[in-house]
Length: 259
Image (cartoon, rainbow, N blue to C red; front, side, top):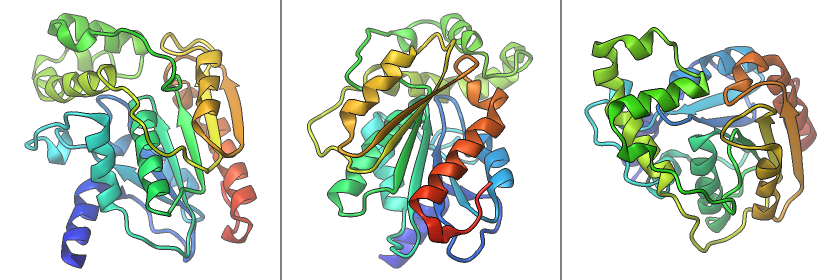
């Protein structure tokens, strides 16, 4: 069992910097088409005070030969199996866009297992109670590329490189499929605090839709709106890091300085 757990950990989770002993853990879950490396700057900025772990979904980069997941729940189960059961350090979750959905299902799994996260930072995604009919994943490659370009989170030159597109489009389409077919199923509401973060010009979520996350937790709720669109967290990186640091210090005062 320990060997399998270790293998799952190495498969799903990436660590870029050595944390200080006892540092709180921050598990970061990427957006659709994203990979663990998106959170390298976060790890660099917060180390060694925070142990930043970034999730690597199947179907991309060093996992590109694996079939993509079929659902948000499947992704959450994979991450859940990869996490160890350390009780001496708090675990916080940070999920952006699709990662917010995966993080929500993961928080529910952790709650059911009696290991609720210390806090869930939910970024760039409307609450699960706000449903829309979206079918980008059913369109052609041009439609998918157009949608990604609108969100301004991918280098424009990359979207014009046919060789690179051949590598990234299958995983991207699979991610859009799991996002657009996701429906919340009955289950426990997390008891941890939710901190919702969003951009004021995000075409995919309004501040009020982000506020809908308040319905999904039995714990305290905060909403913070920043200047910017869907990838506001890149332009507002320091402000977001400050928010993470402030929250972790409040929830885990023995963790030492953060950010």
